[in-house]
Structure formats: structure tokens, C-alpha cells
Length: 318
Image 1: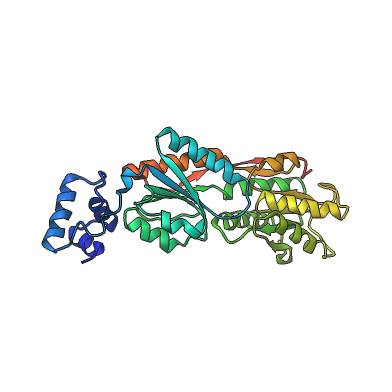
Image 2: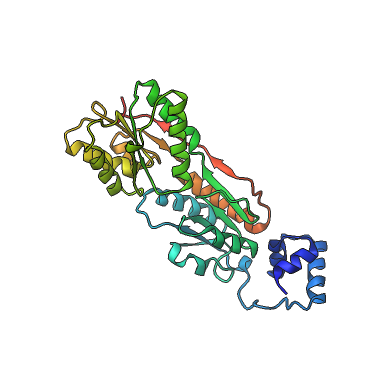
């Protein structure tokens, strides 16, 4: 007998059954008794595998992030830690290589996920077992998973339209890896250019990986063309900074010869005068932690929450 079969008999979700078996207090008493009675009738051992410490007793949450050298993680961690510590919770930080080990009620009460290397199937399996999750890097319509994502499309549309209004017509784009963030940012670029009747040449699409080095490499490749873009739109600040270094190395003036934009709003973007989209990462982490603790307590709405971001114009564009 499996939890799924018990859920079908009780006409509830597997997550609800798991919550009852893990002694969580987010299930109504009538439903709880019905599930326990079905377990008894069907011979399911409700103590099976219960040697682990219940999640609600751990008072520890997990933040799992990718291994990219991206400064915005520090702001997110700061926001997460401020909230959880104020609620007497502890915080564990890890990367994908060890996240499944710690995404377990014996170690943590729930997880904030920001690592696309952790597959959807893993998150769905954990959520179906009643384990609370907040996803910062993907949208998932699954019980026990709250998606808190950046509204990338609107500010990128505003940025690109602003560039068009400034007279730019030849665009280049340095993409990050294939994440929801990159997909939405690139789609916004294409949609705005199409709306304005501006063609985008695929030869001006360069694939990066969010590291500064990949922005530098992409800009070097772009310079091999006889017809370089007037403006280079980058999927994040790190790659934009790498591109600016490569362009300046070849004697090009920013923005007189070519303009450059980023996305994230890092401290280095301000130092280098980079036009970018500022994401409130501290608040992003704080909200994620708040939603996760609501999820753990059983009082969380699972509607997608989108974080607003705003364009910040600086001297890398005219």
C-alpha cells in the first residue's frame, strides 16, 4: 500500500496524507481521522520510516543555489537569514551536489530553491511527500511549491523600448544559460523589436553562461563581424561587464561606438556606469523565507508571486 493509493481512497492529495503521517498540524481533524482510519483498514503501517525527526521540530531551512560566481546571492542570503533568524529558525546553505540529502524532514523543515541543476522531478517528488518548497528560479503549479520569480519581461521590454526610442536599431544579445530568466528577457527583446519593425539578426545572438568571462568571449567573437551592433543587450551584469572590458580593450568607446546594457543591478554595474535592470534581491530573499515559513505552517497560497524590477539608466547608453 502506497501513500498515493491511500490518498485516492481518502479523496485527498498525497501531500495531505504525508502531512498527516508526519504529524503536521495543517490538516483538518475530520480529514486526519479519515486518513488514519483508511490506513488502519488497509494495513498501512503509519510508523513506517518514522525514525526520522519530524520536520516541524528541526526549525532549520535550506537555501540551495547554483555554483555560479554571482554576487546577487549574497543579497538574497542576507534577506533570507534576516527573516528566518528573527523567527528562531536556522539556515543551511548548499549547492545541487548535496541538496537532495538535506531536502529531508530529518534535516530541514523546507527549502528555498535557486538552482536549475535540481530537476523538476526531484522537487515534485519532495512536494508530493509533503515537503515545503519555495522556488526562485521556475514556475511550478504543484501543491507545496510556491514560485517566487522576477518579472523579467516587463522591465526588459521597457529597457529595449527605451533603447529604440534613443535611436538604436542594430541590436546584439548575449544570453545566459537556458533558464526562465533568460527565456523571458530574450523574448521581451524580440517582441519589442518586432513591434517596432526592427529586424534582429541571429548572428548577433551569443551564448554565455552568466560568468564575466563568457561576456568577454562573446564580445570578442562579435568584433570579428564587419557589422557590429549599435547596442549590446546582455542577460546579466556580469556578462555585460566582461563585454565592456573586451570592447574597451579594442579601443571602442562606450557608448559612443557601442552601447551596453545588463540585468540584475549589481554593485559593479553602478561602479562601471552600466545601464541595467535593478532586482531587489534582499527583498527577494526576505519574501522567499516568509513564504516558506507560511508553507511550513500550512497557511501559504501557491499562486505565483512576481517580483517587480526597474530600469536604471546610466552612462553605458547615450
